[in-house]
Amino acid sequence: MTIDTTNMCSHLQKKLFDEDGVYHHLWLSMQDDPELTAVVRSRQLHIYRNGKKVLVLAGKSAPKVIREDKICELLTK
Image (cartoon, rainbow, N blue to C red; front, side):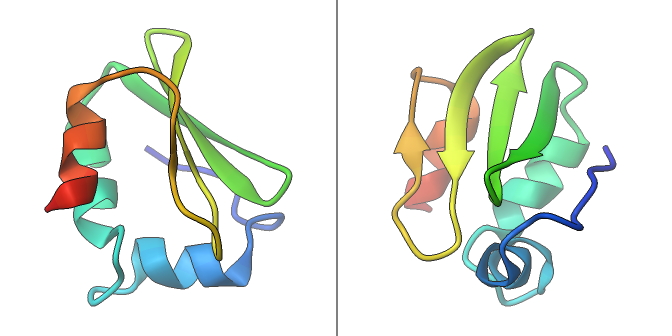
């Protein structure tokens, strides 16, 4: 999965792509799941499964769970 990070919040980039980042394990899991897509909107990462939004990740605020999904369970780990 590739996403355009030019408009992504720098805090979120660190959390997502740095190996010691809070969301890095989530990013790795997203790479192995062909049903997931992600788009950067308003500096946040919007994650979709089969076209339906399931999660929004932001840099400084808490993640927003839209629908219960197995990817959301990884937030607590």
